[in-house]
Structure formats: structure tokens, C-alpha cells
Amino acid sequence: MTDQHGTEPDATAGQRPYAQLSDAELTERIRSGAPTALPATQQLRERHLPAVLSYARLCARTRADADQLADLSFGLAAQETCRGIDPWGPWRHHLLLLVQRVAATWAEGNRGAERLEPAFAEWLGRSGITADGEAGRRRPRERSAMLGGFLSLSARTRDVLWYSVVDEDPDTAVATFAGLAPHTVPTLRETARGALREAWLRTHLERGGEQTCQGFRGLIEAAVRPDNPRRCDDLDRHLSSCPSCAGVYGDLIRMDEDPRTVIADGLLGWGGAAYVTAGPVRGLPSVGSATPSHAEPRRPEPPLAPAPPPRIPAPRPRRARWPRGSRESRGWLGPLGALASRRRTCRMRRWTVDRWAGGVDRPGRVPDRPRPPR
Image 1: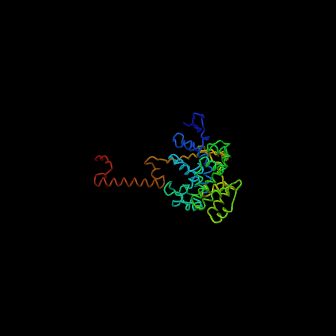
Image 2: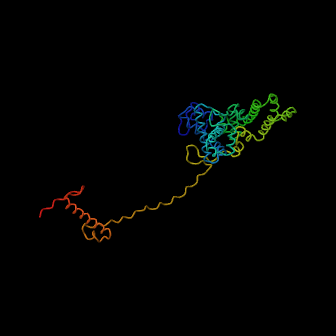
Image 3: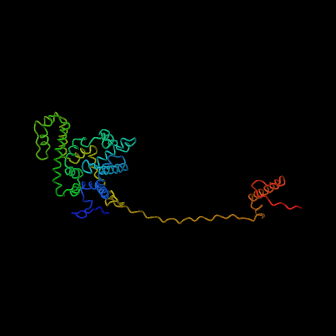
């Protein structure tokens, strides 16, 4: 059972806060259902919402649409996790790809494309990403050679590449997200970049390279090695005649010069350079808290003005009632009194005529007592 502070009993480590669990451990707690699913989802949201919201603002035209894109992406990720669908990569990178899928549902609607940036909407139309989770959707491995090679690496290597290289999170945060010791992160960061170079080149040659290109794999790896690169005349002649290998060779060289931008562009497909430049959104309120974080100080509330005293309605003047038959009721009240007097006179005359004509009162009237004989 979890408590209100997001901790759960552990037989070996006592009370473990959810903030100290790795993304993989939080994923297992989401799949376990209640009562661990909700605090695990909230913890993942606190970790990755600033970055996801930053990318969503690049894709949407307004901040309100970006907020909705981020919220729908988190909801879709939680639903798929409960159904047993593993994230495609690190949780944060997986959420950014889900932003693209949710945006694809908007682009397929009548007016949903108006809520997206025009350049992003145009890229969605060419990328083949659709709203459906399975049917007709290109798998992430099929989008680019870099993404296919990235997803073929181990989960630890993928986490270090994204959190440490692309997002440049502190080593302590990377260690928490990936379930590592903080002192191992710098060494793993260098080995992860070398593993991505090899996987990227291998996937590229397997997909688009010709049979002759396979023989130059070792020469290209030696030429793009950060320390002591080696080139030969045979590789130069091949690169001059093969645009495909020349393109991946140039990208691998640029990855050593600017790894954040190159990796983000290759793994996202759109907006990678703008994503690393913008950085995560700061000053977001924590989940379940109505007060903003310390990054955005709370503004003082304006003083309240005193409320005006309530209005008491003036008493309505009472209409004077004169005794029936008095001279005030007959003529001293002006036109109304005269009109009332004439109406009473007409009624008395009609009653007299009817009574002497037929001797029977009109229907609906109470008959009068008979008059005594004279």
C-alpha cells in the first residue's frame, strides 16, 4: 500500500519514495493497477512534463493546444502501459513520439490541422504517421535509420543517450531515471555514443545500401571514430560515387561535433534542433498542487475593497381606503372615484330592469330576498 507521500513498503529498503524509482520500476507499478498506478503515473508526469510541453509548443499554434497535446500524450501512454504495451524507448522520448501521434489525429480531422504549426502539419502528411495505433502506422523502427538503430540498443544505453546526451540532465537524475549508479553515467555516456554510431551505420547499410556498400562498413566506422580517425583512398572513391553512404558519413561526422542536435533530429524526425534549443518549460506546478513552483514566485493578491452597505428598499406608500358610500369614495378621489361610482350605478340599474322584466335574476347571481307586499 502507498501513503500520501508516494512511498510504499519494501522488504529490503524500507519506505521507498516514488521519486527514487526508475522509469522501468514506475512502469511496472502502473501495470500492477491500484493502488500503485496513480502515484507512479503522477511521478512520471512530474519528471517528463516540462520537456513534453516544450516539444508540444513547437508543434501547436497556441499554448492551449500545446497543453492539450501534452495531456493527451500522457493519457495515451498510461493506457498503453496498462494494456501491456512497452514504451518504444526512454519514457520522455516515447512521449514526444506520442505527441506526433496525437497530432496526427488532429490533422486527419476537418479543422484539427488549423491547431498545428503549418510546417509540422506538412511534415506529418509526408511522414506516414497516422492516428491508428496499429493499422496503417509506420513503426518507429521504420521511420529513419538512426531511430531503427537506436531502438535496437539496450534500454540502459537508450536512457543514457536521451537523458544525458540530448537533454543534458544531471548525472544524478539520469541515474534515477535509468536505475544506475551516478558515478557510472559519464563512462556510459561515451560508450553509448559509440554504440549509436555503429547501430546507425549498420541499420543504414541493411536498409538502403547496395551489396558493395556492405564491404565499406568497417572503413566508414574507422573514418568516423572520434579518436584517431582513419581514411583511405578506396573509401574516398566509394563516397564520391555513392550519395547514400556519403550522406550517412557526413551525419556521423556531425554527430561528434554537435551530438545533441544530430541525435534529436534523427530520433524525432521533426523539430529536434528547436527542441534542444528551447529546453524544458520551467515553473510548472507540481502534480496535485495548486501553488506554483519556486521557479515562478507567486504574485501577491490585490487588497480587497470594502463591500458597499446593502440597499434597503423604501417602503411603498399604502393606498388610502375610504368607507364605502362616503363622499371621498364617490367624488373626492378624482377620475378614479367618479368612474367607480358610475360603474356601481350601471350595475344597480341593470339589476333593477332584469328583476322587474322577468322576475328572475341572471345566472350566476345570488337571488335577493323577496320584497314584502305593500
